Length: 210
Image 1 (cartoon, rainbow, N blue to C red):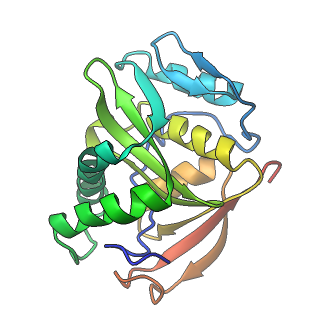
Image 2 (image 1 turned 120 degrees about the vertical axis):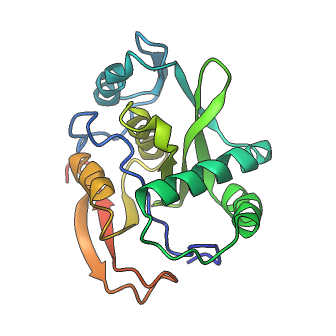
């Protein structure tokens, strides 16, 4: 567990696009990059390319690995997403402490992808992976249900094609539905004693073929 603000709120998080995308239980990526009709860059896997085409009315979106210069934008997405999707969580850390955690813990210690909307390069979401654990997947509240969460999840699956696990708060029913739709299975529940928010959580696991 990290020593972060929200140390186990590794709640990959804000129902990224629960209305978008097919079931992805067979979605270990096959590599390569392609572009959909609306300019969305997709990292492999035809299943996710089909899901991305649902974003045809949105600006173009590209995925790339995060850099230290993205810390402020990633922090802004994290804070906005949690405030909108999980208002029941206690506020345990200041915005400044959260920014320091993103800068000095999340970005250096995790593999982090950001989703940029064009024109302008605005960061609309991010995903963070450590080993086979999806630590974080957050979208800005204005970027939901555009297929962006599915794109980020596709990138994470390509990096960890044999297994993924994640923790999510039990009350975050929209996020749970998103992951279940994409082939994740519930493997554990907890009363909240293992996270600093003391909020009941659940563990999910994905592997190709179920």
